Length: 170
Ligand SMILES: *[C@@H]1O[C@H](CO)[C@@H](O)[C@H](O)[C@H]1NC(C)=O
Ligand SMILES: *[C@@H]1O[C@H](CO)[C@@H](O)[C@H](O)[C@H]1NC(C)=O
Image (tube, rainbow, N blue to C red; front, side, top):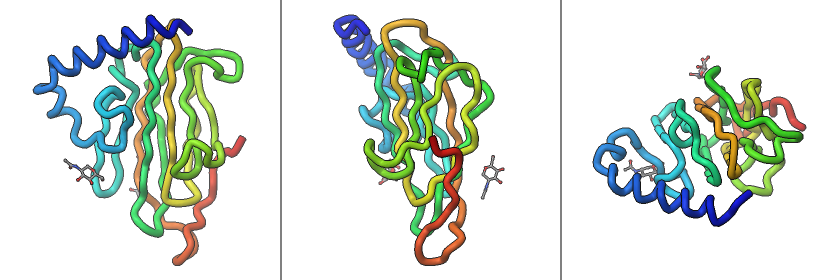
């Protein structure tokens, strides 16, 4: 964790994004769900689903980044999330360093579904409601290719209150 170094990288990334802005815009269909905007990989939203990736995927992600992705399903639907098999995040004990964290709801304090790193592709995840909150962080060293998450929507079993089954809670 070298914060000065990381900050430089973020600034450098912003400059690169700025310079290649014209070409980047075509690939970034809609990154309105990504904070900070524009720094956090590809974000594609369609009516029936979409995908989001770590920055530079499938090349190595940069050090010292934090990306938050919030996925929203249409009313009465839940979210199914599948990770691409091309997946690698720097492994660490309890994924304390680089990791992707998935929470069952719209907030950073929503119940945690899982925190993932290493070479094993995270399991299929289904939200219990309309939202998933996802955060990807990397520290100052040992970058890897990261992830690509594909999602689509599924009907809950109850018509009024969404009640999709939550998958693999901690
Ligand atoms: C991007 O998505 C948001 C939320 O889904 C929507 O409000 C906005 O209009 C979209 N922007 C573009 C340029 O499609
Ligand atoms: C969602 O995507 C998965 C994996 O690509 C697919 O198996 C499933 O049929 C899709 N569901 C819908 C409702 O399109």
